[in-house]
Image (cartoon, rainbow, N blue to C red; front, side, top):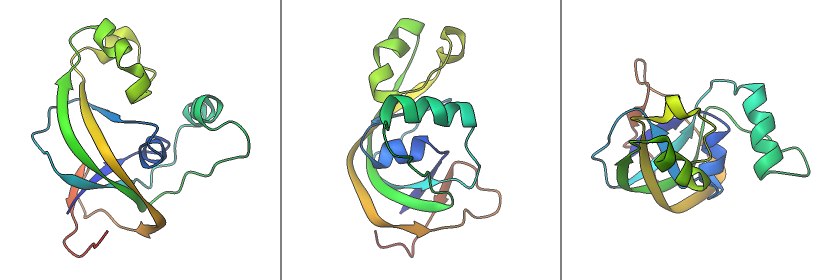
Length: 139
């Protein structure tokens, strides 16, 4: 199974079904079930405040690092050609980019989320940034 590395708090939003489009700089031809890995990178505190305020009001939600949180199917990929297109999809991707940052980005459509009851510890192979293969995972 392929493993997609996603920074927090985005990984948790995907696992919770709140984020159905992952924004990336490039196109993907992958159309299969993949594991969502929450990277070990500590999330930006301003971004975490934004996410907590907008999507997780109430008790403090922890964003685990270095674990696989869920599996999802990548079902499509569209390029955002204008800020308007990006804004029209904002409910699905939840990314607060400026109009100039969003042009040329790609939205990877995610569906059929299966959140894991217990996150699985995982270590990305050396040199892997976005993708890894995890043949031994049975999620």
